[in-house]
Length: 185
Image (tube, rainbow, N blue to C red; front, top):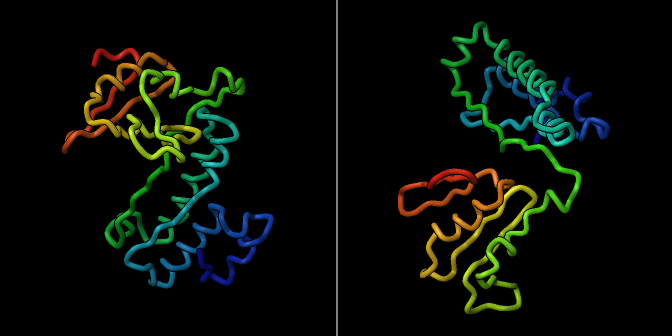
C-alpha cells in the first residue's frame, strides 16, 4: 500500500485505481529487485485479473495472459530466472476459483435455509437453542453446528441434493472431507 518508486507515479492515479493495479505492483517489485532491497517477505497484490474474471466469467483468458506478462517482467529483472528462484521464494496464489454468474436470481441463489429446513437457525436476536448458524456470502456459506447431536453427513446429504453447489467440505479432527452433488460419499 506504499509507493517507493517515484517513476511509478503514472500507475498511481485516480483513473488507475489509485495504484491498485497490476502495473503499479509489478513496477514496485521491479524497483526493489533492481535496488537489491526486496524485503524478506513481500506480498504483492495483482487485482486486474480478478476484475476481468468477475466481469467476463470463467472463460476469460486475457487477464491470465496479462498477469503472465507482469510475472515475466518481474522475473526478467533478474539476470536469469534461475537467479530469481535462488534469491527469492515465489508463491503465486489466486484467491478463488471463478464460476459463471447466472443473471436470473431465482435460478442463481441457493436458499440454504430451505435445503436445511428441518433444522433451526441462529438469529442475531435469538441466542440459545438453535441447531445451526449460517455465515453466507455471494459464493459460499459456512454452516456451524451448534447442536453436537447433528451428524455432518446428514447436513452434507441434504446439501448434495442441489447440483448448483460446487462442493461441500468439512474438517473432523485432522482430516478434511470434500464431496459434491452426484458423488457417492
